[in-house]
Length: 327
Image 1 (cartoon, rainbow, N blue to C red):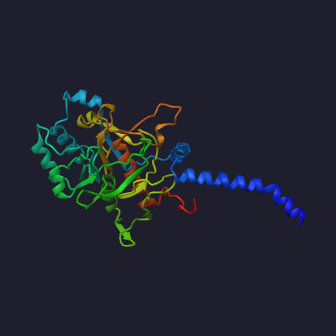
Image 2 (image 1 turned 90 degrees about the vertical axis):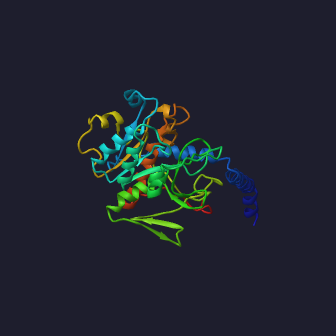
Image 3 (image 1 turned 45 degrees about the vertical axis):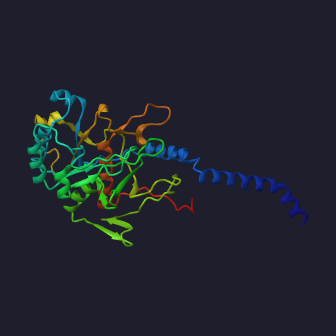
């Protein structure tokens, strides 16, 4: 009995200290004060992973400042996009994603662009569903909207200005579900493989091919009380900026691209230059000791599209977290 008392006296302080520190850490985490550190650790793990193989099913037609200089225009007219789309259609892709807002005409050539929209069933346009700080949204091209060929290109930016999550679908102002731009493109590709989505638990969970896509919850992983509206998932990037095969607008218009480029693939069209202000920081943008390298919005959508296709066809693992109780 005396030995037990002595043992208790010796270890009582250790036990109290351990429980106190554990309690403080749990409290700090519940308050969200460790969230930024957990994000930083997650980003570091992403950067330390072995290099991922390139996904050749997705290519990008990137529009840069050099292309604008080549066109000698202050803005890119609809006639240019008409020529671009006609040349891309000739390559017989599975899908074309136009990650360019085209809610208003930009003459000359608008009427011809509308004709191309109407004749291309595998073309997907974009709209901005979630309002910005001022509540502003961006409408879809009217023709593509009427045809049901539009996806939401909204991105989710965490408090440290990095994109770690993406949408499967989200709800518009009328409470209607809108497929994300990336999901729409992925479904067009997978349709040729005979893969279509299935819903489980009364639509609460999606299954696509070999993978069940679990819905992101507000306290998953290092997140604390995050906005989990819509059907979100953690983005499993394949690499840093410049990962996907990208060719310039000029090279396509001047037929300086290999003949098989884009065939039976998804072709994404979007801006890649800094002046277009469609750039985002990701886990691959670098740590605190380096100059952050942003990724173009069209590349972010390419990564999410690739993630959906790879999970459905090959069972590429999604990023998941333990339950809150386990954590």
